[in-house]
Amino acid sequence: MARAREGGSLDALFGRHAFTLTQQPDGTTEFTDSEGFYGPSSPEPVPPLGQLADTSAQYGAALRARVETLAD
Image 1 (tube, rainbow, N blue to C red):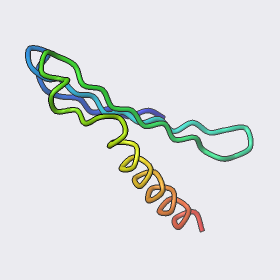
Image 2: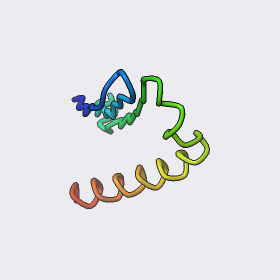
Image 3: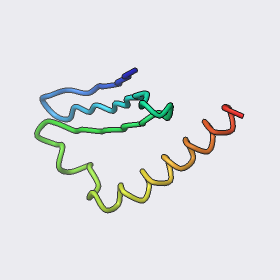
Image 4: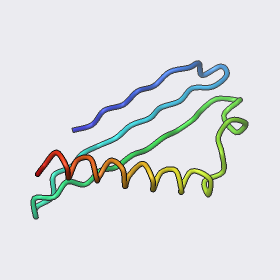
């Protein structure tokens, strides 16, 4: 299952956030999250990758905890 949201203008700043859930052979689910920014203004608002890594890890841990709670 894949979902994406996007918006903006390619003339200035266009962004896309997507995630994919893929069932694995062992019954677990792989979660892939991605974000992309495009256009002439894209380098300005996008934080360096190191700043995003901590936030992304926290988001992933919270999502996993919530899903595991619902599975019980």
